Image (tube, rainbow over all chains, first blue to last red; front, side, top):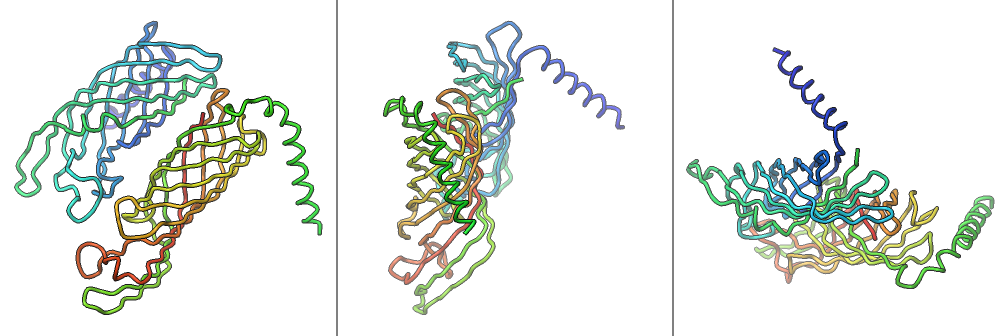
Length: 190
Length: 211
């Protein structure tokens, strides 16, 4: 019974090891009003392209005290390098790409702060969305990188009605409404 | 007596080291000494004291006096504009958005003095002290609050004009918050409040980037 887990772990380690030797990669902390998490960026070998994986919490309603429950999301985008500028101590890169997001989170509800009539009344639900991002990455000489990005996540939100238990499907509004929220990745470059 | 001599010697040493490094600093133009940046982090509220005195809906007076360990998770995000007084010291005005305790969100305006034992443009430890005022964001009840904090951190130099700071600090907020109505929804009306003093003590763990 344990064998498949061992094989899976070994495969995962082998993948990470191979990726680490094959191309430059960055691992870091993602910080945003949307949530916090981990980001991995893998540069495509010989091409001005980057694969970006991120796993983060979803803070919708949490920071404003409207709920005590947080969501989670995982996303992947394939980004193309649009602009490159090199200085003495840094390399600046503008990247643009697309991919997808899967998650479990609350969707937008009217109101902003907690009060007796502003608490989130809908259930959290599954999120399936496209992910379009644009970002500015700065690689510093000492193997640290900063990446500031914005993304739009048009998609669907699947939740149950808290009263009847009926399955409800709607457009994922937060994917658009939170498009102006910045995401800052603080990364170490391998 | 020995402590006083030690203090004087330390002061003279700091002055002397500042004077030695002042030459390159003086070559910088006035505008080069300005800094801007952002800081964000987690705030762990730990202690809370309350002294409330108000008239209830039914007309009787309620007095509440407490001091207790009350943990609450909060966060803060700040922006700053600063001026380098020397290579060791910087003065900056901070403002932003912060939470302190349950349902208590404020807009702070603070003045921070930072001291870098080496210089502010290289890797190293530093200490800071700050103080200021804060306004409640979404409530009309409650007057202006006062806050102060002390702490330290480690500066990582990323480029000639870019630094990354990792900070740890202790913060105290003296507040006059709105009082939740003990007999129903909403808060106690402001005209029924005789006293609403509250104190919060919290630990800040932050990351900052300055240019």
